[in-house]
Image 1 (cartoon, rainbow, N blue to C red):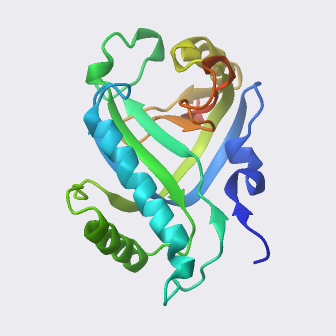
Image 2: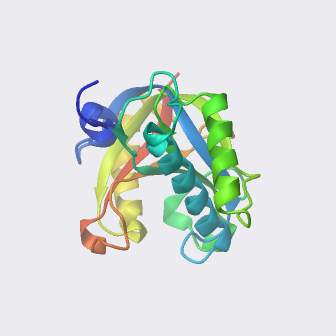
Amino acid sequence: MAGTFDFKKEYKDLYLPKEKPGVIDVPEMVFIMVDGKGNPNTSEQYKNALEILYGFSYTIKMSKKSAVQPEGYFDYVVPPLEGFWWGEDGCFDAANVINKDKLHWTSMLRQPEFVTQDVFESAKQSIGKKKPGLDLSPVRLVTFTEGLCAQIMHTGSYDNEPATIGVLERFIKESGYETDISEKRKHHEIYLNDPRKTESEKLKTVIRHPIKERN
């Protein structure tokens, strides 16, 4: 494969939707995931999750320089951070998030298809040697198919998401669908910017809700 593969550019329907909502059937993808609970702004658990996710992703990406490359390896840009979010009752109502300390989340980074369980375990051993104090027990490799969803691009602060989610929810109802958030299907966000380097009003976040046809 010539050049460096960029998932955002190659799969614009997944990562660069319009600010007008639309429907998408999300295919099977490979992810490294870490589950946790708490306010992402203050939680040490969330901070550790990101360290683990990026540690794995860049270790796998740089395996091109190792003696034995993974079978099928190609050079690529690490995809953007993603997250599933839900509350104590398993659902997520962005308009009524009063106590962020009670939020549950799954943080995740997409991986190329060549990342098998063996590749994952090799990266785990490498990171364990470099960072022996980092608890790697929460991390897992998952092949996941999200399926039928509606999504929209949110521009601005994360705290201003409720208005955009309202637009998305109205679209879902008006299009003959209903939101299908459940224990297995979650409110989903994809973060296209680093909030440490981007002004809040310029942040781009894909907001995606699972849907099903309304009976």
